[in-house]
Length: 134
Image (cartoon, rainbow, N blue to C red; front, top):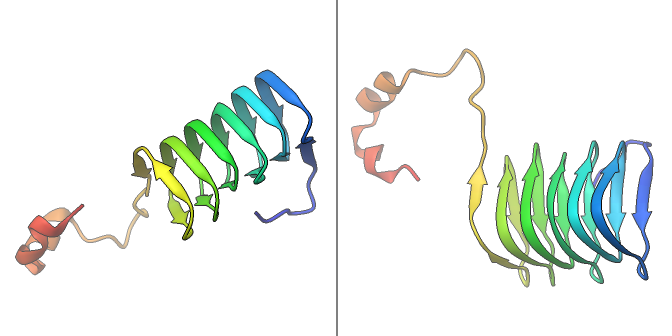
């Protein structure tokens, strides 16, 4: 979780929040949150966190327990000891050894404009790869 010198909001270990949490910067959750989390920056769920929510952020690192959906523009990371039950939509997904993921992953990779060969050119160049697409 790269902090670019912006603000980091911390939900402390003894805190229990229910509702919508909105952060203009990054957010670190050490306690319990139930509801929605919207952050302009990154979201870090520490090892002691327990979160049941829908998260929208730039990047997310889950080291605690999470249930719900994660939708990030960049990287979703499931750290050692972290647990995710739900769906993750991201450009990059990293699951470290010891992390548990139960759900669906959607790799939301937008093709770059220009410089991409057409689909017909792909089929002509590599017909044997047709069945290998995931």
